[in-house]
Length: 366
Image (tube, rainbow, N blue to C red; front, side):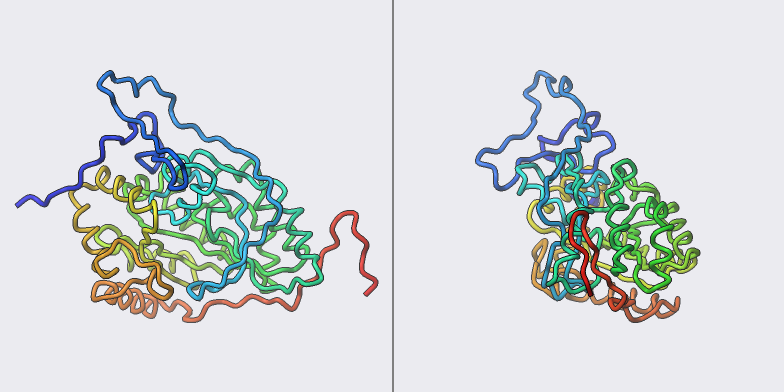
């Protein structure tokens, strides 16, 4: 008997207009007073619309270090050089944050980007505060610090330079090979116990990776980035994140083996998370890209969240619960042990920190 499929909604944007993008729609954000969708009125008028192009706007940020008290993550502060992300990953948990800016969590998130050009100056000022106490700063906790526009904007690199000068610890999370550009900064920091990098690898299947993360580099290039960073003495973690049950969970062992072979010393995973608007974005993509697997994937995911698409409770949201979640956890643990990945997270040093002196400020006498 043929498995039932999920059908894409009528308001899916024409493929030619969203070529190279992840989301299929651009539904208005939840904070908008009115909602709007593009739909075919029978006159084929959607074909007259312009294709979605990347727009970069300046984000006049007044502060740069974001704090959190989540028990699910290992850091309490982070920096995001950009809002929105051109990688276009359909599962990205940062998508709902774009609705606070009056944009859609769909195609707007991938095409209407904001760059914090004053990030380095703000960071220098905040590190210089008398009240500041150093702890590892995470780069890429929300959107990727090495998304394509970083190649020209170089905001992430300027942040790293400030952290390097201040001898401040930094952990980077990315799925981009562009991180290797900054080995000249990261390698000396790593030699002093001040830097580490996590590379996200969701699938080794080129087709799955391309449709799921349309503007991210190939899995092979990510593994090459692991190799280059390792060869430079920079500790690397492979993040199998997110694991999508029924689509990518069969690759757990293969990804870990490939990453270990490339030199990764640490490994972690996160289960697919579908908070807020991501539920819709992911389901639309799934029904279009993998209609034959859609029902099973959603069913497996709900089995790990008590029948819901997502449960946001601390301790649950990243791992899920139930037999299938337990199976994933055990497989990951056994593979990590077999491949001799380190069991403990790498702790970075804070004792080398020296407060910077922002331009125009008086130097300390002590």
